[in-house]
Length: 265
Length: 255
Image (cartoon, rainbow over all chains, first blue to last red; front, side):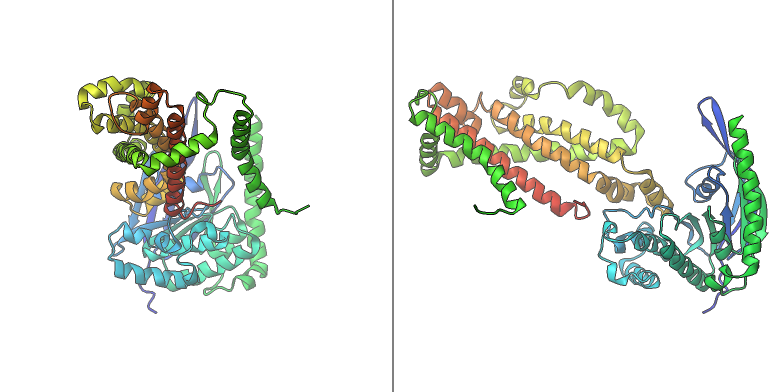
């Protein structure tokens, strides 16, 4: 399989997002500069309220920045981005099949082609047998796999993932992380993956962006050195993994303590 | 003693109250308590019921009443659903309709009957119009509430996955509101019988309402009861029908 066709390139400069929440204005994002290479898997880690989800929503076109620029270079990609939400966001009134095909239906992909692509995507996440099920008949893990299939099937230049596995139990999370890495290695789309788990960020990404809260700023960007294709279990047992995890944790701990002290002022 | 499963016991309990009421009613009259000319016994009503079915009179009135309810229901409910969804999707539509609904909803719809007779004449049209108006309000309010309470994540997903306004309307907002729409449709069904029977008291020679009012004027109390019971039965059957349609239309409903 040729992996020459790589995902979108992103260039974010001086991004700022301010919410006018009554008397107090909340600075959700401030001075965000980030460049993402085509086909790169970037994870964003940070405490709650650091604006990581807001950043993703702005990139997804669901929110607009107060100032700053975003340049997304996605020539050759019909669908610039697709988002995977924390709470699958599958429509309860549609079958798995209709949910997965939703982004193709909205874009007028002919029925026959749509069926074939949905079929392939369901196979990719191992849900072929459940195509006629409704979301409430699926487990949390299956729902999240459907949501991933729904994103991949549109063949987007970039995947935006907002803590997609946070609500799953530990075993399911590990399985789905491995599946995601496998699928990504085949397709080499650009991925921006938001998580609050340091482990997850180190396991999945090429780089980890550390964010801090109040205001949401980028504290540090760390290169994750593990080779691809990755075996997640081996990686997580390595000494290098432990060292990186500790380093990131120390930064975050300082930040969380600082934010808490500021809140109590 | 016979042992009953929990479900069978519940079913028995469900039947005890109506059957018990009828039995007590019959026994009291048979014991000579109450005047049978004014309060007929259930057995008298049953006899009259059979007689009225035998000569086709009851069927005729039922058919007329059902026709008026059905037509008025459709004419009232369809635009109510459409406008209710548009109100949830577009702020200007909501601002335009809000004061109208707030002002018109509390008016007892039967108070409009003289006006409708003036506008539509003494035929079916005035009754159908009354049902349509009475159905419109509970349906539009429930539709709007249902659509406005669709979780934000579904709007986000739809937008991110390239849904046009048309797709939003037909695939997201409509289905998202459907359970609440059905709650409105169920209320509207009862309301439509209530206003229709009342409207049939005047200016018509057909329908269950007419049957009830006419028997009052002739002091045929047993016929009056036949009319009342018939409305109850029609209400029961149609509501079971709507519940069945709801079950088919909302396969994702978890219960």
